[in-house]
Image (cartoon, rainbow, N blue to C red; front, side, top):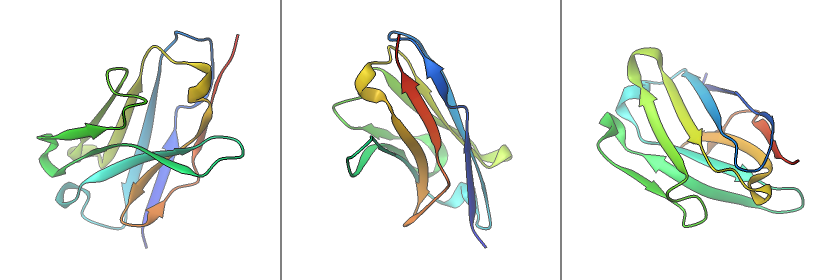
Length: 112
């Protein structure tokens, strides 16, 4: 059974940083690309970025490009999302996603 467990969210001031983690199990993590998505209050899911297997390539939504960085540690079956220069509009529940499966999410709130 596939499990994705996100962590690292919290309350941060505008301009601050957070690093989210996602521990994967139930599939061969290193063989697959992974995605991060988010859902802001009252809105649908928004794709924010992805990383291919082997970490050779990443892609980002325009809304986060230059501020967010996705990485992975295949030895730890873990996906990361480094978020810098956070804005109020980044407030959302963040999920990692493999295929169509996502975890329970972690809340990120950007507020002063």
